[in-house]
Image: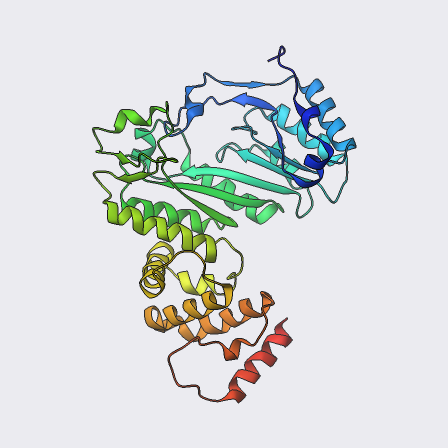
Length: 358
């Protein structure tokens, strides 16, 4: 590692001003998760910390404020992690934005106390969960303490200002629709800001190929080589989850449905959203090019059909989300229901109540 030259001088002024600045404090990964090419590494190797921070200072002085660390395991060696965090904390710069990939079950107290100090809007964590199913974890050689991971996610959400992206992968060997539902529901209960739904890809050279015959894993021959089916998940189910993932990005991850989403998911997050995704696709036959106003209408109509028990509360929450989106027009004028309109007075009262709540 000491023989490598840092490339950061290659970022030009336009890059620093307008593009994401990718950073490496270490290279490699000690874990052996078979879906990932980093599983071929023997361990993680850190760059010399003193010279690395000198390079970070140069970038900072040139105007860089957004730093995306691509280390697979930023919090693997806590002493190094703390020094990097101290470097940025000392800047006391409100424009700083730092992105880290972190191990979910390794969050010692020293690191927790440091993370608390960062202001809102500064930290973003990508937390790889992938699955909570212990047999699937064993199949892919993934080591993870599930209870620690869940407790740490909850702690991060409740005690820091970090924006948390937690990842799941569908299509892993041994994962069924039912076991994935359990993983999704457990992860949703930890309340990350976003659940990023990935579909398994066959990365050339990754050890996941050893399972192809035993699990009848079939991949697309076209990049990015997504899985099409396996012995536990049919092609139709795989496409169903692809649509689920797309709609989840539009509704669950977008932040545009933050008031209505809890009413929508209720006590069965995965099952309820799968019903919604199936309804939306049946209604529209598309997963793209749905404008936001139309999306609010569709969600409202779907809930009237699928979840009448919580419809009244959900429609109130959906109106709050609509007002927060600052779309032109009135929520009362949207075609959000097939029921006859009762009275414009009720809609006006609802809008007035919303203004008071705001």
